[in-house]
Length: 132
Image (tube, rainbow, N blue to C red; front, top):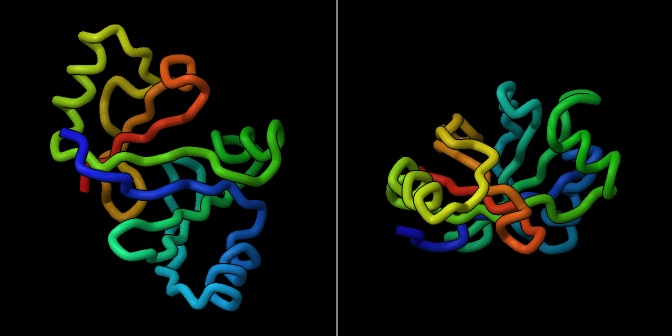
């Protein structure tokens, strides 16, 4: 079952510079920078009630965030939906013929299990499923 929007992922070239807007201009609090090697990204969460904004900085020239910035520039990269059982959700989507990027969950930031739905099945939006 989908519970809520977990976070909005924003691709940035420099996570510390980007975080300044949220902390200095908006007065929001940020979590520590976390490196997620499997996703080739550094992340920082910006707390906004029970939802958050997740800034994503590529670790190098490879990986999905680096490719996103190269192709589209900085900006919203994905919307993450919190689910109670990611495996069941993926199985349900597969049965419905939804195209998935990840057929099995991977580890994401904050120890979450994550998987992405292909934008060709979602009218161009990259959707992440997230189980915490």
